[in-house]
Length: 350
Ligand code: GAL
View 1 (cartoon, protein in one colour):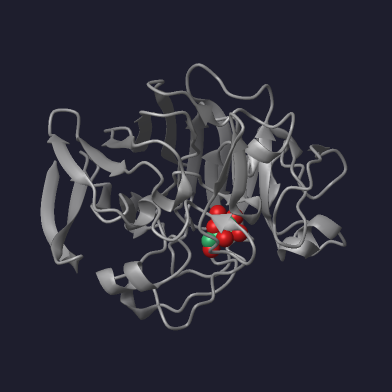
View 2: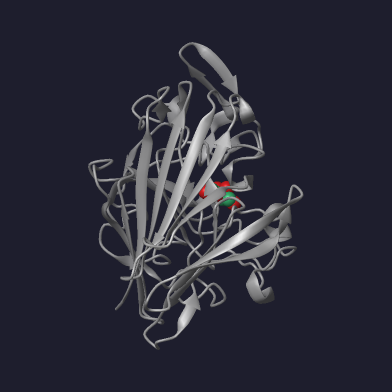
């Protein structure tokens, strides 16, 4: 079932929230602003629904607050060094919005766009579209972006990302939800366990730009191939963790991208009994333990204060700053070529 309601306004236009619910009463709220996942109410072992993602009660916080809460980010999710890249001999410079670098599509990335929505009641899905103009934020190519959210009756939220550009460009799209399976207002996420199908990761410099190295997870805190508590190695003496103030790294899935979404990550919370399985066809995931989530000016839903490490992001994507490193994943999209990836967040009980 899909219910639409108004959620304030931006740019002098109304913002809407679409609430999709399934036969188990699981429901998700999605804003037309940034195609943002605002609420994700999932049953726990006590039979009760709890909202397992961070987010705000009002549109103003989404517009002014940082952290890209729940939003779809792009046209290039993650960082591009000094906002510069070269494509076919042409140099491009992007808006610098993160120290010396460009982050998540620049000043007015996809997370700030008002998406148009087409409802599909039969599939319990909404198709959301937005246009990024040629040279907007410095990127070449007028790009059509289409994000489809589907809520299934077996408690899975599926997100399909499609895009096409009229000129050769670069692209990296993801959803920036912050998860805590006990509920966003329940404290540290370091007690959750995580398994990740990743055998290497990307170390960064102190501006969080890849050094260029692709490092094996063997013997490092980045080895999640066997499930462990997120907190297990969080405070260990590791230079890469220190630089980032926690996990804020791209981990590379074994074998790279796949034809169809496959199971790549499992997040578990013994307290609530919730398990979140992540299926994707993307080659990597940015594991981010909300190390910057401490903006006291923008409390979360119900007035709950922000706090670092109270949630974790699993941002399925391509490698950061790929275009500036040999041997990184291909993020170039040709004119007229279709970009098409899917990530599924599937919920179960332990
Ligand atoms: C993440 C990124 C972090 C931080 C965050 C937004 O995707 O890896 O470094 O910038 O977005 O606060």
